[in-house]
Amino acid sequence: MGHSEVSSLIQREEWDDLANYIEEHWVELTHSHRESLVSALNAMPAALWKSNARFAAAHEYANFIPARGAARPTRYQHAPGAEEGLLDTLARLTSQSAGARMVGRFDDAVAAAEEALRVLRQSPAAATQAIRPVLPDLRLQWAISLQLGGRLSEAVRAYERAYDEAIRHDNTRIAVEAAGTIAFDFAILGMPTQAREWLARVPVYVHDGSDTVHEMAALAAALLATHELDLDEAGRILADTPAVSSETWAMRFFAESSVESIRGSNETFATTLFALRAAHPAALSASGLNDILLRIAAAEAALQTNEPARADIVFADLAARASTLPPGVLEPLRAWRAIADDDLSAAFVIASGPLSEGTASPGVAAELRAVLAVVHLRHDQRDDAVAQYVACRKIVSDERLFDVLHRVAPDDLDRLEQLSGQPIPPAARAALASSPPRVRRPRRTAARLTPREIIVLRHLVQGRSRAEIAHAENLSQNTIKTQTTSIYRKLNVTNRDGVVRAVMASPGLLR
Image (cartoon, rainbow, N blue to C red; front, top):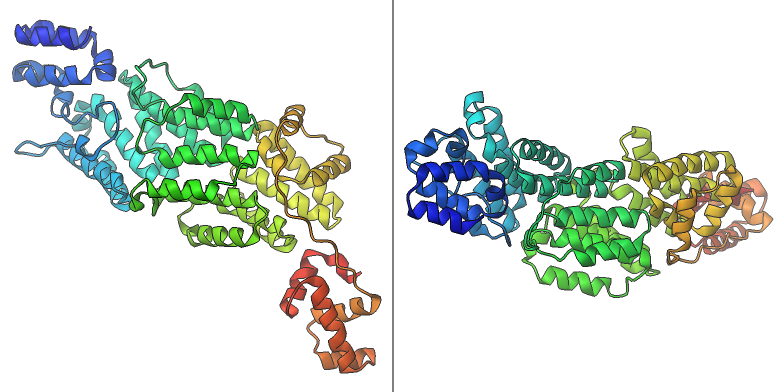
């Protein structure tokens, strides 16, 4: 079956047989032989295709249906008739959206996709019903534009509608791509259970290897394997899934760099990222999801290096994009950076916000509770440390987020296990044992202040002047100045604000 049979029926002008053939093989034609379907619908007499609801819906759309293979702006073309109907309008907006996103104009791509969704919502039921068979293709394009525009929550909803309608109309190819992409989005949003559920919903679809539809499902599976610290499996998935789509390059790099970051293979990260950006038009990584993923990958790599200056630059760049990031993406990275810097007060403030709001996804919540457990542990606040560790442990176990525990220093993790009496899950223990240790910045040793310096420190944090301290302690101002200078040096600060921050991070300094 295929192009030869359709061509033969067209040449013999056996239209009824052609119509019956298309009906019988509709699913296979739409999946794997779209060129033949386009030829058949264009050749068929108007009276015949108008008498069949499915043919009528597909006829005007036939030359617009995306073919397999590499994406290209010229693929999405459609010439409406004299009077633009619903399908003409949706095809035009879809063409605008796809064309815009392929050249990096993601705001325009999102706007056109949102306009198409609005038009569809406001259309009469009869008009919508007439084009149902081709809506999965259109919805998929709108969802891709929303996703690459960084609108992940809206994209997930759009992909879900595309999936539902693809299943309803036997469009397996669209269902595969939609389900796989939803799984990927849930994986990067810290919702692995939902990601696994959507991977399980990917239908069986066999193709010759040139199609792009399985790539997103593979990237999602690689991210989930990385969460479980099964780096060999993640690497195998990526190696077995060649890059065949021109629009997934940043997503693939994000998945690959997630594996390499945990492995500690970050020596060439900056060079690789520079080469990757140079290989694509600058507009494609200047905004939207591509920009977000590349910056997150850079921040993750920076956390694995012992180069504070590099981390400063990377995190400053990420903070500049804070308003464009999905909820909960930035806080765990900033909190772990604060832990690496021994800035425990900052780590506490950063981690507490999303948890108090109750909006954190499981992955984000696990990260932030791990941070708080470490902060409380280092402050010797044992009950609070245990409470946060137990809550984190449950999420890690339920969601198989073993990579969260990989961030915690081994001595901190051992201490939390001892205090709580709850060892980490056996599967997590095995995964940690087989994973390379993280690169960690040497922890600052506790400052050793003399008894007299501790007294002066108490005055400093209360905001008293040098003269007031000298008067209260019956000492000269020069003596207070000398002791203040010594305190600054030991705490590695340059002013009174730095002293206050150091005390907030380590209250034990006052004892």
